[in-house]
Image (cartoon, rainbow, N blue to C red; front, side, top):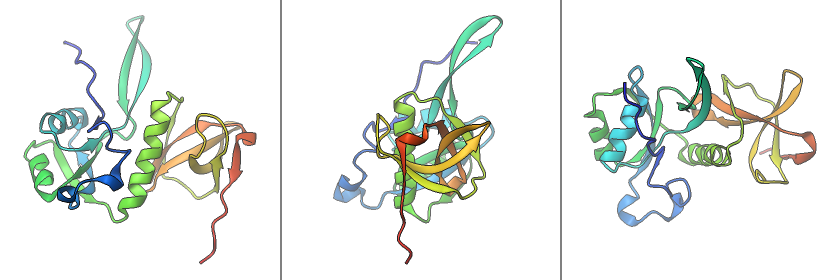
Length: 192
């Protein structure tokens, strides 16, 4: 079986950078969480890329041993989910691929955008991530130093180490990264 070339996980490349600066014709664009049919997430991302429909499909590189050989693979952070940023017409076009199980509307567009942007920053620096599911509330913190400065998440303990959990609250899933406690500061939220 041939190995496919690495596909882009975001289209256009600056999708998660300039969401506020989109042109007037793109003001009707909204985020949709697409849940794909079984094992169709990468194929859907290829189809969206070919049709030039804006999307984000977070993936992380992993090394595995296959028949005593090291193989590098790109695994989805959230298997089965692709995030579409499109117009109602582009949503319909994505349905025509026959790779979609359901499309979930996103009630808080800004929160999802913020969560996806933080996730993209973690993936871009190559941080060793652990996927976390069914999040529970914890202490909010912000990294104040180093290459991850400005990222906000929840402090949690796992196997005796402190981790910062970056959540995609809409999916109730996220990723965590090992962090030293001296790199974070608490986030104080005003009671309203």
